[in-house]
Image (cartoon, rainbow over all chains, first blue to last red; front, side, top):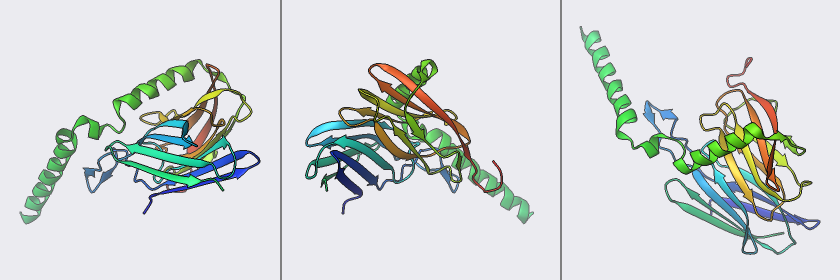
Length: 100
Length: 147
């Protein structure tokens, strides 16, 4: 089960990449029942287009829960888009999709 | 007497919880962001102070009903050589929400960020070595009436 929804869609030579990552994005500042919920958020994310990194992002804890991103890359239908992320606990996730 | 005892024990209990929260967790767990990210945030703050007004589009709601999810979009597709797009929420504890290093993609980023209170949000776009910004105030009205 992939926890990332990745939907690249090509239109007029531009691929619109929509990504939705399922992640709690805890800041480490919020309290639940008097106890601090430990931080658990994405710190780094890269998006590749046909193997080349096009977006390399430093993400803070103030990105909302289940983060959504949209990028535009010049490209055509059938190109491969890959998204990788890493969170502060060292967990990684990735998803690959062919542009439609 | 029983009531007093109950109160006492309840207070002792909460004191322990606070101690756990403050003392036993490691700093990296208490501080929301890593030191690396703090450095990036500080750098963004410094560049924001000297940045001129940008000629790109920054779309954010004027009033956000829920501060947990505030959608915003930077569209700098018309600018050449965009290398970085950052979202900077002035009143947040760590002001930088995210910094996107663009390498070949178009200058367009759309995402959703969290905001603690009403704040000015700045979108920073670096193109060809110079940083420009567009700022907009976003009112956060959690709880409904007024802000």
